[in-house]
Amino acid sequence: MEKARISSIQLFLLLTGFLFGNTLILAPAQGAKNDAWLAILLGGAGGALLMGVYAAIALLNPSKTLAEILKEKLGKVGGSFVTILDIWYFIHLASLVLRNFGEFIVTMTFLETPMAVVIGLFAVILVYLVNSGIEVMGRLSELLVPVIFLVVFIISLSLITVRDFTAFFPVLENGMKPVLNGAFALITFPFGESVVFLMVFPHLNKKERLKKVVPASAALVTFIILLVFFRDIFVLGSDLMVRSTFIPHLTSLLLPGFNVEPLIDITLMIGGGVKCSVCIYAAARTLCQIAGIGDYRKLTGAISTFCVVLSIWVYANVLEMFNFSENLWPYYSLPFQIVIPLLLLLLSFRKKSSQSNERAKSQKGKDAAKAY
Image (cartoon, rainbow, N blue to C red; front, side, top):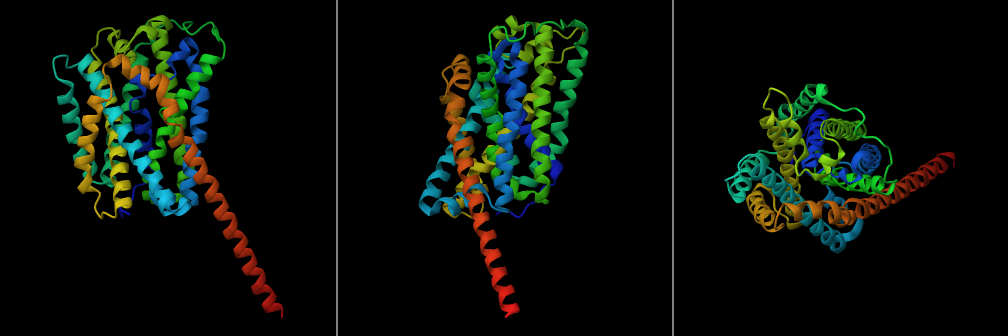
């Protein structure tokens, strides 16, 4: 394993930037319309519990990455097979995020620029960042991720004079089904995607702080998503939000007297950059461990190139992108985000219980020998 170490604040900001990522572009709970705030609260609570599962796995298997845990719990053959599936998931996730930001940039900012150029240039920067190591990624998150919070709060406060504070009424107009669907979508995107951090958690310098970092990050991201939702619905109304493609961009255009569109682009690019870089890093590290390659940097260029090609090929247009993220992604992610982690957690608890029993028996034997 790479010997680099990151602090708890660096992990907190990396995780927060990752969760923020492309969430505002796709707005996973938006199907609940004006009841999306309920979906966000439920999804945030469920997402925090799911992230707690990942933290528990890491704490029960200290200093071990996901690939090492899978090999230990499932055996060499089974562990290697599941690890290969996880590598595909990490690469697929990175390519989807690249496409999300490519669509956003060429639709809203650089209208005449080919998407392949935008995604390719972004990927070159990411390769340089990932090759710099997890410590540099952590330090850069300390510098850039707070910009996201600052911009969100500035824009939200600036729009307070043009708001309709009754826009989210009536509550539960369409029943609980849209709320539950929106909550489920939010659990799988973005919270469940943090399973990638099972390749990052071993780098935390003080492992016991993982118990505080993970729930704090989940709570902060839930608050930010909730704040952005109320900001957007108070300004646009639920009907216009449903018909909009990129909601935060449209909201920023309504700010009187200022052009904050570049700030929106910057925050989304920061979040997307963090998310893509962590995914590429995790994919490269996992592939190195399963293939027995010493330096993950030998693979980052090839993996990033594949991600760029896949991101261009994966969707025909922006409508297909939104359809996949809303209707297929939550179910596609279930094995990687829920089934496999829960199995690992169960096996980790069994091993810990058996080790505790063995220690108890050994101690009884020693006590009996002393008494004799």
